[in-house]
Length: 144
Image (cartoon, rainbow, N blue to C red; front, side):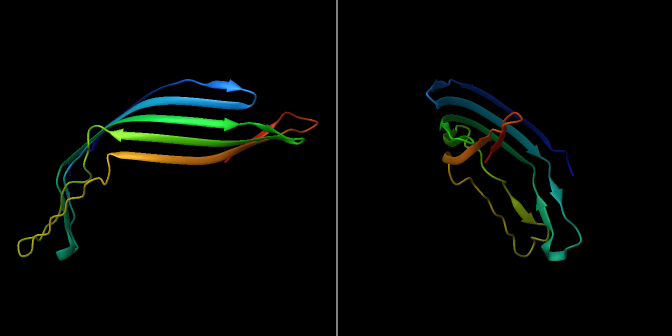
């Protein structure tokens, strides 16, 4: 079995506009990842033995996002609903794991190739933070 190598990186830039409890934060991010998986073979499972060939996967994504939230004061603290909307595009078009071949494929070879279903993704996240204030101590915050 050969070694596995990998590298990852990310760079983010954004801004934040605030006013009357409302926060709007647009941002952009570049993400990169690279991995090389060495080949490997299973033994001891007879016809079910599997062999993986060496695989190299690359990913370079651009992400555009927006995070709005609004702080709503109450008599017992502050409730802040949160939203995150992100669009990402994979410029490298990396494929998933390349080949999986049974070792005993002499009689009936079975080779499969998996590819990614999309180069573009859109994600939406919802949450809230709850800040409770107490008479004797500082505030407590819970984020969901």
